[in-house]
Each structure stands twice: as C-alpha cells, then as structure tokens.
Length: 141
Image (cartoon, rainbow, N blue to C red):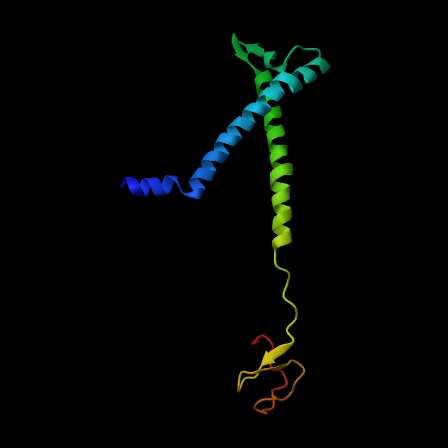
C-alpha cells in the first residue's frame, strides 16, 4: 500500500504540479508586494491620497474597504497580463509552429486489381494492364 502511494507521489506530474503551485504562490506574493508598495502609492499620489488600502466608506457603522479591492484588482491584472504575455502567447506560438502542414496532393494511386501504385494520370495499370475506370478515386493511396 505504501509502495503505491510512493509511486503516485514521485510521479513527474504530481511533483511538477507541486513545484508550480509553490512558485505561483511565491510569484503572487511578489506581485502583491509590488502593487502595495509601488503601484498603489503611485496611483494614490495621482488622486492625492496616501494609499489605496486606506480608502473606505461607512454605512451604518460598517466599514467597506474598497481600497483593498482595488489593490487586489490591480494585482490580478498584473498577474493575468504576465501569464498571458509570457506563458500563453509563447506556448501558442510554439504549438502553431509544431502543427503539421497539410499533406501534399497525392502523386499516385493504387490499382484496384493488383494494389500496386500507379501515377494519377495513368488510365491503365503498368503491372497488371487493366484499364482503370474514368472516375477512379484517388483517396485509396
């Protein structure tokens, strides 16, 4: 039982996923720090407030911290744009380059009698000498 669990955990997919989650969490922490430490104070300077995280309004004594929502929204936009431009776009480019090109038009067809390959323009098989029908299909190569 433990041997099966060990094989499952040490599979490449599980380890790769765990590394991706840890790196993603660290990257998110970095982006959130950049947003809170640099971007929102810069934007706050434009609207003459100290920091977005301090923006709020009150209704019946309840405090609504919409500045934190703005910080989270800016963080999301930065992370989404980085993922799109530095992960998705290159992967799509590589996938489009690796797709196989359409096969070339066939240059031969198979004889229905002896199954040997003959040129498309041929009206008679060179191997068994049968006369091919006028509308003989090419797709049987």
